[in-house]
Amino acid sequence: MDPEEFGTSAFESRVHERVAVDLPVDVTLAGYGHPLSARTRDLSAGGLCLATESPIAVGDIRSVRIHLENGSSVEVDAEGKRQTVPAAERSVLTSVQFVRVEEARRKQLQGLVEDRSAKLAEFLSRSELEGIRPDEAMGLTGVTRLRNVPTRTHLYHQGAQESGTCTSLYVVSTGEIALDVRLGRGGNRTMALAKLGPGAIFGGLSLVADVPMLESAWAEYDASLIEISAGAFRYLRIARPLLAQAMSEAAVRRHADRLQALFRRL
Image: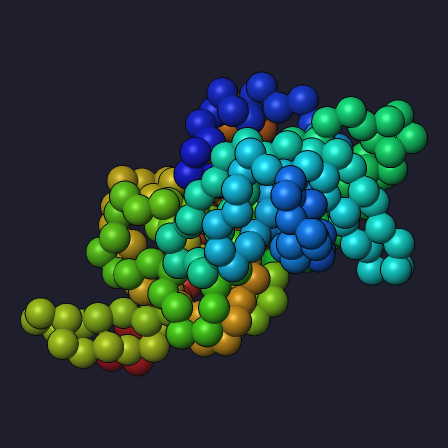
């Protein structure tokens, strides 16, 4: 489910909590003789978000088989809902809803989501989102999704303000993100601002203040990011205001720390 499509009402109306997770999936399509390979971006007991290299016929989706790390798999009847191509990605995302789910299968899916949520909450509580307790991080996992950024691909550029990728807060899960700034008249001088690895946070400034991005962000190497979109943040400000405030403070603090380090080098 593409975060740019989500408003506050979308999060409030969810029946099942989702969690950002990357797992291989086989997708069965009507009229195709073999399954299509895909990856999950998020998962709930009621559906998932698929990432594929090219568009698929949303109306032809019949079932999905999710492959787990322990070698087992979960197969569920499903139907496609919508499809989008996010900025800064080379994948097509398709929203899928599970249908005719047996109670035993539903419990299996719910257990998988809860296990993933606990692991993600532990990771987030040890990240640069300082001041967020593990129990608060559990409340955050339900509004996250994965965003993959290929090597040398820009997520956003300095000065951007309204595109989807510059209105989110990110936590690096794997890979490395580079931040740099343009200086001088006409921005003819570029300086490295930071190299960010797992656990580092960046972006999110536009969630706190109506200002353009102060830096450019791009993937030094293939990176996987935990994304909290603008829609998710608006929901948190209503449902979990103290958590939203802690996230805002962490984002501003990291921006300030990096700019201060830059000023010392000038």
